[in-house]
Image (cartoon, rainbow, N blue to C red):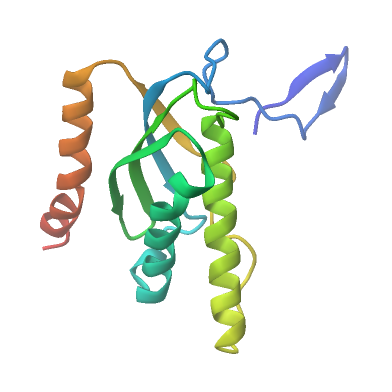
Length: 161
């Protein structure tokens, strides 16, 4: 945890530094490579019902947010990767943080409700607080990231053997 000094000699432990690019407008028309991790390093996302929720909510994002276009998407045991395009010219264009935050919230609520209906106890959100993003700069980088995402499950299989 980083501590920021706001008053000489006084430490404020609850101020977190953002990992977003400081001068980047996250509503710009652009593609992003995003990784969202679970709080635990366990194969949480291998639970079929949770995988279904993660997929359904991913596919529903363009209906919720104008100007959002989905690209590659993969669910790994404890994280997901995806490519998403934002159209900053769309009316009420969301930021990348709005889209990712909504996705995390919608999936967590749907999972909670699923478990509640099944009379299974589960804790709160299963996501880490933040997410990791990379601005996709050109078509070569886009293709490279698409390959990385699509090859990720196979790389995991070969590591486990």
